[in-house]
Image 1 (tube, rainbow, N blue to C red):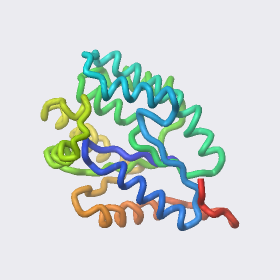
Image 2: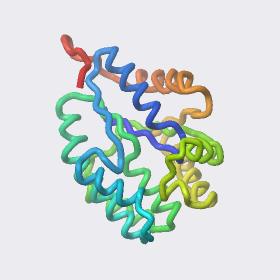
Image 3: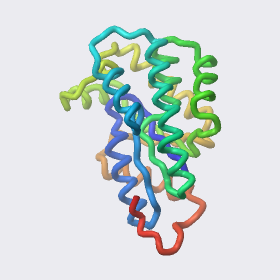
Length: 213
């Protein structure tokens, strides 16, 4: 099963992926955790370039870099892990491009969808968890860590457009998306996520697996 985590900045995706991976491994599943941009040598390099750079970057350049990293990520990490029988938990995936570069930056979403199809083919998540946190709360969390990147520094209107895209898409596609309130304490958010995921897992771990991967 391929599960992506989406949400605006500071929604707690990284924390919740770690907690979910630990809980699933204890129950016997093999789990691979990864992130975007990242997951490969190329992806990590592009992550530094896109998020850490102070250089101006067009929306078009941003989306090509992001999608190029995703194409390698799918082929080097996600597909092999799924083929090996692992659950893949990914911090952001193609939906983030549609939200950030589409709704946020104003690029044509239909064109972005076509670009994603070229990069990932049929490798879309089986399930997407949207951690729902008010934009102002999430940004305050991010700024409180001192780890602020070029996306975090965008204006409030940008982040509000991204949040609206996530919510509208989740409402329109309940067969893939599940919305979880990300404002309570992390342990409570984790319990809600675990309930949702366990309800969707239709097979049990294979006998003899220790869940380590």
